[in-house]
Length: 98
Length: 381
Image (cartoon, rainbow over all chains, first blue to last red; front, side, top):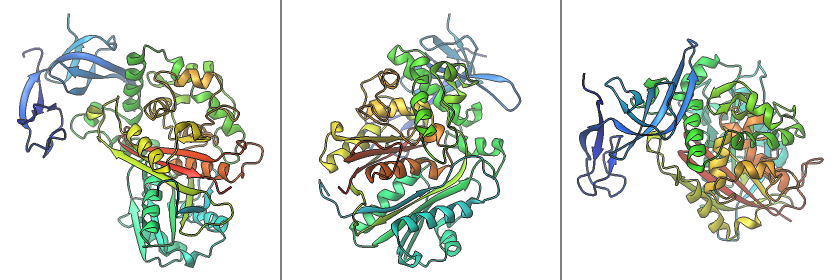
């Protein structure tokens, strides 16, 4: 298994905008059919919360700004805080990049 | 309609909110609608337009038609609506447009549901979580409190603030609720109480989250004024994203909606005497207040602590207690803010009245700050 894994993003051929959601038209410039790319799952942790599920286990959720631009949500290690450099494996599990 | 208006709010009603089993969705909607028609001094048959918000406990393909039959009216126009927490104000904005266009003269806007008692807490949590992205967010176990917990974490990190700066926002709302008949939570709380309450989605504690409630609210939008009816003088809205992953925290749309509504009213923020802003969580309130320009960036908590949001402050805010303290029964939750603004502008809040208010600003959002609707109201006198 390679680490960090890749994240699927969509890049507009016309203006270069990169997004994590698929759209029929680029919301920035109106360009048609942004194209799927894979980018490294590496970036900076922007936000972190912890929630306890109905099974009483606590999970940490984070927002990560990928080095390639878009923001993605993921689950990760308990010690993460906003500002950490982080990377994810193929299960979208994020941990600190040493 | 810059400055002037040809649309008025003739009648308003909100029931008590809370855990009140025994009444279903249509029951709450009928109860609120009857009270709003009484407030407007109108017979039900005078209603020629009807807008009804969705209910999570009783999903229906045709919410307005089902309600019309139950109430006993045959309006020419009937439409159900679904824009999350912004639904109530979006319906009032639509009612206003119908009246302005001459398509209807008396439009009834109705909301209500038994969100606390009609289903299990787990079922409601799952329904609400579906505002998240079905592939990128929901499978991670994210819930609505988690989405807002992430927003809160980012808000505090970006501004160099600490948890108490959000906790402070819950305190004055409880003071307002303690002076409002029908509020769900009326015991006063301190900033320490808010910080020490059970953690729901770090940094948001229980007292920084709205409850789920049973209740209803209704508004009568009219082409004819009376001696006390406030006028709708400004409308604004914005829809810039659906999911947290595509939200731009520097421009969620709150500021766009506010600028449009204030511009249409032809007034400045300084002329607003009553503020009523959607407050599903403390961070919701902070982000909207700051993006709309009513509060400087990062100063929401300090403003709450400094008394700006009290009845005697320069920005009386959610003087009924808001979603966090008056309660939140879905679409009616966001409409209670509008009811409060109308009551304040009519001088109908004995014992908790803002002194001679002229303009009110009302703002609601749906989803994760995804849909925004803003209204400016002007008092009749």
